[in-house]
Image 1 (cartoon, helix red, strand yellow):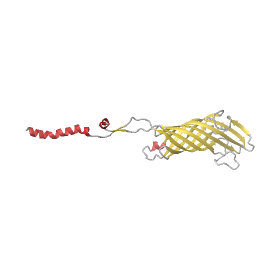
Image 2: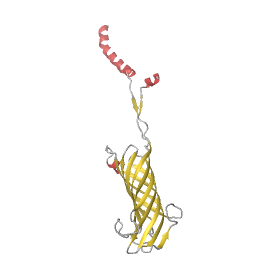
Image 3: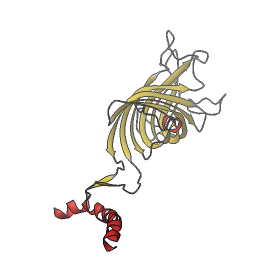
Image 4: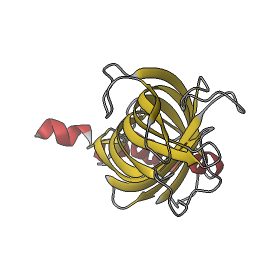
Length: 257
């Protein structure tokens, strides 16, 4: 009787021992995720492009006409520093200089200005918003809005004689000393094309609306003068911090070392 009882219970005892002892002889790796934290990406950018005014002293069209003294399309240069704190949002600060000019044959006048602008904008990534699971990350489309300050010197001149009709602001050229100051509201779009993990090209176009209608010293029509800056540039990632899981070896292996 005793022999039969032992034979019956032996498989159960072996099964229990296997469940108790098997984890002790199993060597494995445990993946322990770190605490969720924000991923900060700092980007330094340089852009070169065009500056186009939308003012009262202007001619229809963007291309200069024969005999036109100032060009309606002029150069601009900008340096920016951006902080991308999640896949959707980036905050960017920018310092920009531009030449703006146009003419009006009906008025027999032309206008020129030099502008130094400091602004801050917030960019929203529409690609990541609409297609969060997409593997296509090389091209990104963003919209942005923000505000800034424009320091400028402007002048209106006779088209035939170059006589100075009126000048506003301090000395000509760039800088902020003795310049007139106007606030600007900014809206536009940004297209990124990633070349490598740290370098990307971008196309930026932003419209600036000034808080007055006296940029060209003529007050009429639309109550706010404006100008557009469209440029091509390059952005370089300065520092990337991404959360990732930490892999720990089996604790006994670590203890033996």
